[in-house]
Each structure stands twice: as C-alpha cells, then as structure tokens.
Amino acid sequence: MIFVPLPFVVALLLAILLVRMVRQNDWAEQEKRPFLLLIGAYALQSILIGIRWGYDVIAILPIQPVVATGIAALAWISFRNLAAEGQASLLRFWPHILPSILIVALLIFWRDGVGPAVTATFLAYGAALLWLARHGPDALVSSRLDGALLSYRSLVITGVALIASAAADIAISLDLEQSGGIHAGAIVAVGNVITLLILGTAASIASGSQSLVTTSAEPPAPPAPSQEDDAIARALEGLMQSRQIYRDPDLNLGRIARKMNLPARRVSVAVNRVHGVSVSQYVNDYRIRAAREALLNTDEPITRLMFDCGFISKSNFNREFLRVAGTSPTEFRRRGRHKPETSDTRPTLFVSR
Image 1 (cartoon, rainbow, N blue to C red):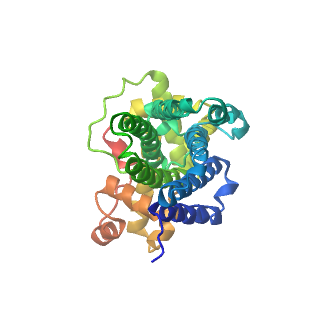
Image 2: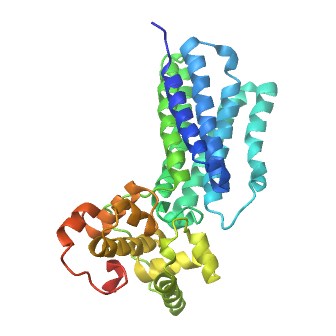
Image 3: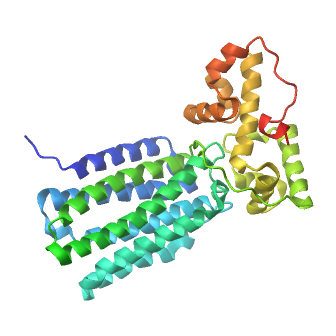
C-alpha cells in the first residue's frame, strides 16, 4: 500500500478550495487576493510538513519557518485589507515581508534564534488580529454585509489559531528540554495539520464573506445615542426605504459610508447606539423583511427572491431568515401565504424602538 501522509491530504483539500475560488474569479476582486495567497501558503506548508514528518526529509527544515512567518503576515494583511475603506494598494503592506527576511538572516547567522523569532511573530500577529476584532463585525468595512459576521468569526479564529501555534512552539521547546523531544513530532504534525485545515477554511469563508449565527450571550448595552447618532440613523433609514440600497448584493459598510459622506466607523457607531445591532444585522433585517413580503405576495422561486433581496448565499439567507422570522423561508410561505403582512416597511427589529 502506498503511504500518503495526512498533511498531503490536507494540502489536496486546500488546493481544491483554492482552485474553486480561482474558478469563481475571486482573483479579480482585490480584497480577496490576499486570501488566495494565504490559502496557497497553507497548502505549501502542509506539503512541507508531509515531506518532513512523513518521509523524514530533514533538508527542507529551513523552509518551514520562512513560510510560517509569511503565513502569519499574510493572515494579517488579508483581514486588514478587509478593514480598509476603498481600494487600498497591497503595496502598502510591504513591511510585513520583514519577518520572513529576518528568519532567513537568522538561518544564515544564528539558527538558535529562529524558534523564538517564529514564536514571537505568531504571538504578535495573533494579538494584532484580535485587536483588529475589538470593534466587532463592522470593523471589516469591505466585507459584504450578508457575510460580515462570519468573516468576523474567521478573523477571531485566525487570531486565536496563531496564538495557539505559538503556544505549541513553546510546548515543543519545553518537551525538547525535558524529554529530548519524544513528543515533538506528534505535536508538530498533528497540531499543524489541524491548524492549517481550520485556517484554510476560515480564510475561504472570510474571502467569500458568509454569515454568522449570533451567540446567545447578551451583548453589553451601547451608550445612549446622541443627536448626531439619531440624525445619521434617520439618514441611513431614508436610504434604505427610498433607494432600497439593501438590495445591492455587494453592499458593504464602506459603500454605505461613501453614500452618506461619512467615515465608516461613524456610521457603525450610530447604528449600534440607536438600534443596538451591527450594520450587517441592520441591513440583513431589511433584506429579510423584503423577502418575507415577496414570499407572501408573489410566486417567485425562493432562490430568485433571495437574490432580489440582496443575498448571494442560500445558506446565509436561510440562516438570517431563521434569525429574524424564527422559521425557514419555505415554512414561512406555507404558513402565512393567506395571512396579510403588516404594511410597515421597516424590519421587525426596529418597530418596537
């Protein structure tokens, strides 16, 4: 029987994921390019791990830390690019190639410093990603609003995974000191393979900008809205009702902010203070309200009206519909086809406010 190391299987899965994204023409969208490179780097690292631990090829060891630091930097660039308003040039991220250059220099002049440098790089980028996540889903202003929440979850997962990888490196160092590295191979092979698969999936989700199920934990109450917050919220509601901008499937916080001639963060804060939700939830509530009316008053197929209301992914649509309406679109149409829908054009979430 031919022996195929598990990392090669993971690399194949990541490669299939990458090919699918390329075939969907994701490379044409600037905010998705770093994610494509990131998934490619994940696949390359998985192959290197398979060669090293599956066939005991020690000669490739120097390549692994260089790729690892590149992965950490690419993860930061990918999500930071989603947090940038407008079309930011990727060239501005050039300083993030310095960690990999440092590793190359250490490999030449001081190999004992490679391990601590990789660990410090992972800790730094992991912490930076979690710091980026402190503003919630609205921090990713270039992410499509039907998927900003799951992109946000992917951001958090990636940050935690980088820190966990640094912790694993520390555990390996302790194992080498205490037992001569008896468990090091298992920690590296299993831990890295699982981490790469999780990170690859997270990167794919983030670039596709899918949606997230909200947690059951009660969020802290936002500060009381100011008069300026109320004015911004009214202006945004006017855009929603008069121009129905929520029907744009590529709508994101950055586009909304440009239409209102305001900073994205200012719009996000106003919506959070006035309505107590993120911008993505606010917009998706409008979309679901439109979908509910269409389900009751038309014979349009569910998939078609899903697109008309601004959703791209059926799973996102079903998830958001369940969150707002408490049932599936099919069941909602079946139960309420002969019941009149309220004439209020606002999402149910805001009627009681």
